[in-house]
Amino acid sequence: MWGPPSPSAILLAVRHNWARIFNNDPDVVRRVAELLPWLAFFQLSDGLTGVANGILRVLGRQSVGALLNLSAYYVFGLPIGFYLTFRRELGLEGLWIGLSLALLYSAIGAVGLVARADWEREVAKAQERLGAHDPPLPAASSVDDEEQARALLEDVVEEEGDEV
Image (tube, rainbow, N blue to C red; front, side, top):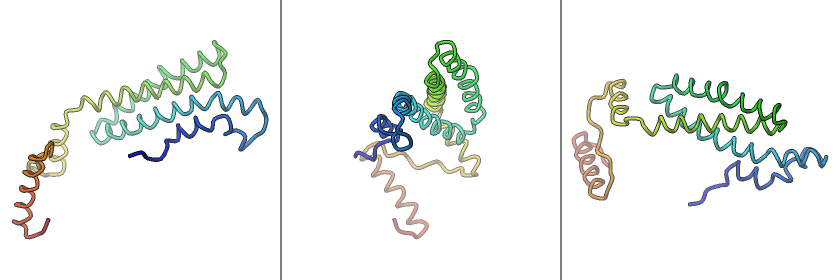
């Protein structure tokens, strides 16, 4: 049930030693350890955004995903990052916070759009594009539904002369 650790978890686990691979300067090691939690958060948000934008692309709504990303960075993330970096004097950490918040904003927006999608309509549109007008097999939501779907599939296969 448990898979390999995520890159974010690895970054958090080794954050105090990661910079030592490349540099032994204590100030560099300290700064890298301070920035890696934001990088880990950035990675989580980036992964979620990438998956949700991929689904939007499949739905034919890539322009919505593009506008969401454009607003996330240029309207939201970069202004916040610049403010934190230069006005609040957080330096590089402020910029990473702004970029991470931009990706979080984009992830929330894209996941919200995907969650509200009318999947029945999307399946019908995909079938229309493919020229397939046969109704899809029923979804197996319980043991009875699964048995009915299997029986229907066996009937179709028997008509075509193949085996299940």
